[in-house]
Image 1: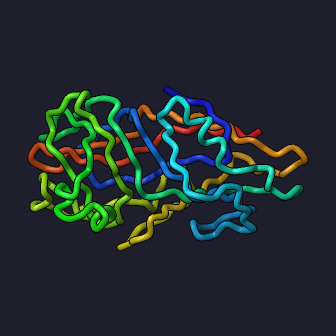
Image 2: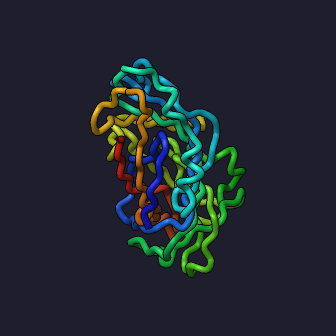
Image 3: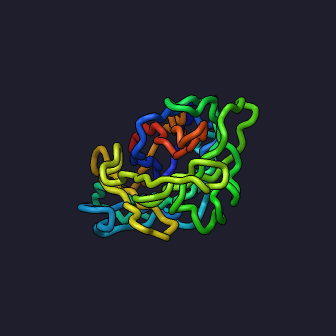
Length: 253
């Protein structure tokens, strides 16, 4: 289902994991935490947001798969703060690297894993604490579950190079990697080389520049989460999930 909302930001993650045997499907829950939204007069990298103006700040979690997400998200950010006559070409969004997701359907990737749904993340699955390994390890859990077994699960944007847990206590693992350098929709985004920061930055080029007039602009955004959850076979019938890309349609008025 696609929800139409009016707010001052959008969220879209563009990265790939180095696995071939993945499957994507809908998310019944897809919670993202916004931290900051800025408009820029130009941008040449994720760290460059020229003449930035902050139109939204503070930690706020939004479930973009929820029917009522628009009414919650709309309170984040104020386009009326934009100075008159200035033309903006880019938007920079800061989000938390943690997502809370729940399967909307049973997924079966290629390989040995079958009937995968999200399950609650625990310290045991990390082979240590979640807090200590959330960016350095990606957990996996046993397959052969029904949609009624699906639970909300914390998943993270792991580091560029990370460890994939291959069993229920991460005593078996292997090296894996993400590629954040070529996002599908953002122009630039953060990479995470041995990174402990909780922030992930994305810079988008606006479809057309915005010149601020007397009436503050609005940004209409339609989210679709039908392919927003990804899973692949870690090993031995183990399901490993990652945050997929919500579909986004943006109209600036």
